[in-house]
Length: 226
Image 1 (cartoon, one colour):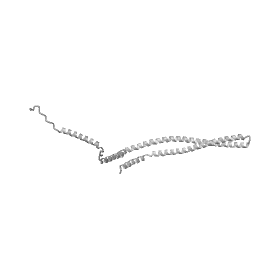
Image 2: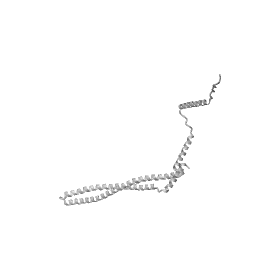
Image 3: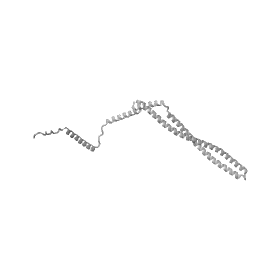
């Protein structure tokens, strides 16, 4: 079996054993965070819709106030010359004022809902930041615990197994490199100098050896007569 495949199977079996002893809290926390993020997204959509509605209410109120003022001015203008027309103007002024009251109530409700959604979003956003930080920290702590458990597992230590793989890789590369001859020099000029220097060094060594092995001439005795 391939060494890397054996290592993968060994590591996977260790992880499977460890996971059996732990609930996958990281995955569960991720789902909870995702649900909060989805709720946040939907709330932002509702908040945007409310903001649009508030803008429409404010525009309609401005038109109704203008309309009520116009009918009031017409009523005053026609009071002396055409009483029935003046009363009709008053009637329309009152109708506009009633619509204003209804819209003001709706506007207040929309603004209140918008403010509540904004407060809820701020709370959720702050909570999400905290939860994401906790998730990252807890995941790192649990991963370290898993790694420590694997490192204490004796012969199946993943670090030792990984080092063995790289040792075998280095041996294979070294063996392959030994099968290739040394590259032939492509610089004859430099080779000539190197050969001459090598010959000179060899001659020096030879001369030294010869000097060591040549017997010295015998000295004449001090009392010998000539």
